[in-house]
Every structure is written in C-alpha cells, then in structure tokens.
Image (cartoon, rainbow, N blue to C red; front, side):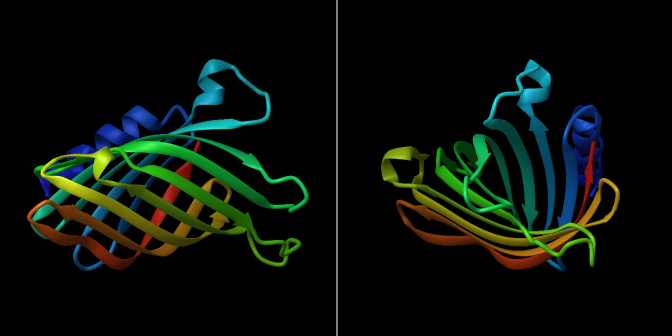
Length: 185
C-alpha cells in the first residue's frame, strides 16, 4: 500500500502543472493515471493535440506500467467527436510490448441539462513483432463514461480488458469494471 501512495504522490507532483491526474479502483485493483498536453508545453496551438499518457495498474499479484503518446483531433462533420492515434510502451513482469492504439471520445450533446458528459473507447494491439521478452502479443480494450461534476473534477466509470499473451500461454491480465476520480489542470 505504501508503494501505491508514494506513486500517487509522485504522479500528482509530476503532473500537477499540466492536464490531468486520476485514480480508478475496484475491489481487486487500483490504477493511477496521468496525462500531459504536450501542445501547452511546446507552446503549439495548431490543429492536432499531442498527448503524453502514463498509467500504473496494480492488480492482485501483478503490476503493469504504460507510457504512451498520441495525436488527436476533432473529426470534421461530427460535432463532439475526437479521434486519436498513437503508440505506447507496456511494461509488466517478463513482458514488454509496443502496441499501436486508437481512441475515440464523444462529448454528448446534452445542452447544459446535465454536466459535460463524454464516452471514450480505446483499443491497443501489439502483434508478436511488437512484443518482446516472453510476450507473444498484447491487446487492450477500454470503454469509459466520464462526467465533469465540478469544474475540472471528473468522475468516471468503465470496463477494461487487457490480454497479455506469452509464448508459453495466454493470460488475461485484467478483465474488470472500475470507477474513479480525475482532476484536470
């Protein structure tokens, strides 16, 4: 538990100057999330938004760290829809992968009847050529709903499925629902 608290403090100190930090939990695991808008750091304001994401997932008996970069932009003709593409590096025990990822975020058009609410879906995949050490392939799917309940404070809930396939056999790393809190800066 001390490692989780120290990691939370580290991430919050690192990321408090920019974009967002978050924490999600369920009865079996905890995840610490961080996101930095690289456009702000580089003073870049043209079209595509570049995002650096980091996360640490602690499950019962296993840990996984992910660091990724993506570019995202609003899809013309569909108000509220943002698409993103990128890659990330996944570190787990005896497993290393570099999956390519796609993300879609849709802000629901609720016209101020309830706080800003969005739906997000993420898919990441690394075939055997992008999986290293004892890894054979990696796949991740996330579906998440987010609501900004107070200015810059979000609550969210979602489902994630992470499969880490090893050369010696397949392993579902995580398959669970979760809920959490995110702070934006």
